[in-house]
Length: 398
Ligand SMILES: Cc1cc2nc3c(=O)[nH]c(=O)nc-3n(C[C@H](O)[C@H](O)[C@H](O)COP(=O)(O)OP(=O)(O)OC[C@H]3O[C@@H](n4cnc5c(N)ncnc54)[C@H](O)[C@@H]3O)c2cc1C
Ligand code: HEM
Image 1 (tube, helix red, strand yellow):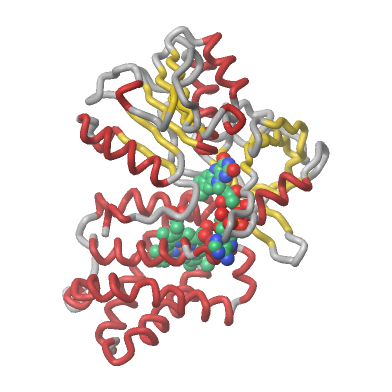
Image 2 (cartoon, rainbow, N blue to C red; image 1 turned 45 degrees about the horizontal axis):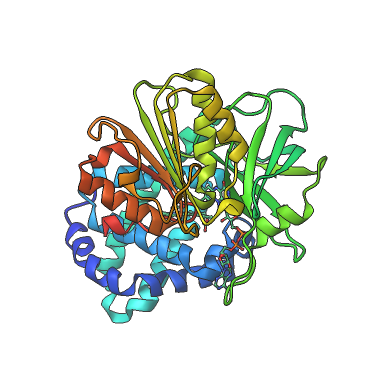
């Protein structure tokens, strides 16, 4: 609980942070990396460069200040952060370092407005948030039976080209024994040592059902855009991994876990490479409840950019109550196999809106559009779950 003394300072900070949050986190990262260069090895250089990580930490700080009395709103945010942190090996010892630099950055950006009383209030608030995160992270490490930062060598046993830009890599433990267990929807962090010496970690959702024998990830090659460079790790994996290569990965983590083993209908919506956790869920349901009603809708640019079609065809042949609907944005007209245009809810089979769980994964604009339409149609928010393939912006809390 935040003390009575600190509360007014935190409450008053919300508009100030809204205005200066981004500047604060930019100063924070600059100083953090200057004094602890080894932290470059756990932070995502791509997200640093494109600004999304700065925005995300700023969002977390705002979200915390704006919802200090609203644990129900903060709980899912905290859950997402702790899973991400443990997949990266964040430890309790990192928190004082981050806290010190965050407070110093608030002081630097706010100048005279950052009075000692305001800084004390934020030191207290940061300490409380850190305590909550550390406790959850320690619990997750203990449950997984690992120490913070542990990675496990996995050998590539098969490589499958799924579409023009997506390739699947099947992995088995080099040490022998069972592959880690996981729940569909979860991801691993994959470590890569880039030619410039930087170690980078990226998360990849597991794209096949758990079977204790192998893990599969499916990686989209992030090509260069007109003004953006090619993705570092995805291209490295495409260009360097061969059958027999060894790649270090974390234990599986992640709190986006479609209810594959429950009853009743389930709706899985995806776009682009956001299909990967949905394929894991679909393959799991095909194994444990092939009679279950599943609405599986996917949006792709065109057939060349539609990965995992073999998995879907197999599931369709095996699951009498699976409705698989495909949208091709570039198609001119509907045909037997696909519908033209972006995903449209009215073109999906109907389902019991109030009682059916809906899971979605894809680019943020895709999810914002589906989320808004589903809520408008009457789907209760607690039935909606989403996964974001990058730092979440938390706009809904600000
Ligand atoms: C939970 C989770 C699950 C995921 N699952 C999958 C999955 O199943 N499959 C998959 O393919 N991906 C998945 N991802 C995404 C994956 O982790 C990586 O983010 C992705 O592969 C890109 O990494 P990269 O190193 O290739 O690109 P990065 O080098 O990190 O670049 C990321 C983006 O930033 C841009 N960028 C880099 N530098 C700059 C700059 N200076 N200015 C402007 N823009 C810049 C790049 O052009 C690129 O678009 C997942 C992410 C998360 C968080
Ligand atoms: C109270 C303190 C902290 C808060 C509120 C916080 C918040 C966040 C948030 C919101 C994200 C993005 C999660 C997502 O949506 O993917 C994140 C990711 C991350 N955090 Fe923290 N964090 C804290 C402390 C730390 C510490 C102590 C470290 C260790 C040095 C750390 C390292 C990271 C890393 C490496 C990422 C992933 C970066 C990326 O993928 O770009 N964080 N954190």
